[in-house]
Length: 193
Ligand SMILES: O=C(O)CCC(=O)C(=O)O
Ligand SMILES: [Fe+2]
Image (cartoon, rainbow, N blue to C red; front, side, top):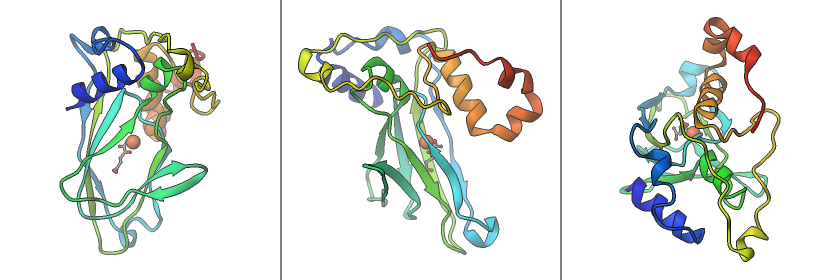
């Protein structure tokens, strides 16, 4: 399903439908995880997952019946309430880079469930080969006119080198682990490219 969607995105950008194939074929860094959010009575706060963009091409997300996921739209947070039988599709950073910011990666976060409620979600991150570099696609004029360039957030630089971008996402998602075990990497991270 992710491949079909990515091909549809390529077509919508006026590219060949297989334009992204070489970037993820072979040994792509796709990941899937099961995430458990205990209720507020356990966590003592409302921070589930802080605001972020996913680092791959696309994320397909299965939610259970419990609310919590929010996406940023026009500067406010919008609830993405679960709809049975559906998956949430988030645009990731690699599509933002390839489309020069015509497509923006979805900024999203998760708020901790109420006391006594536990939420489970299963995201599938459709990513790319770690040794691939994301090309800058030539967009048709009408789309290029609306491409704002990839976001230049100093707190979240986007890297065309897929391996570097994956490492950045990992260090950002788990800052405590990064500080403890990979302090040298935090120091020497390359600058955006
Ligand atoms: O649990 C969710 O709904 C989203 C999780 C998420 O954003 C992530 O793991 O990147
Ligand atoms: Fe995410």
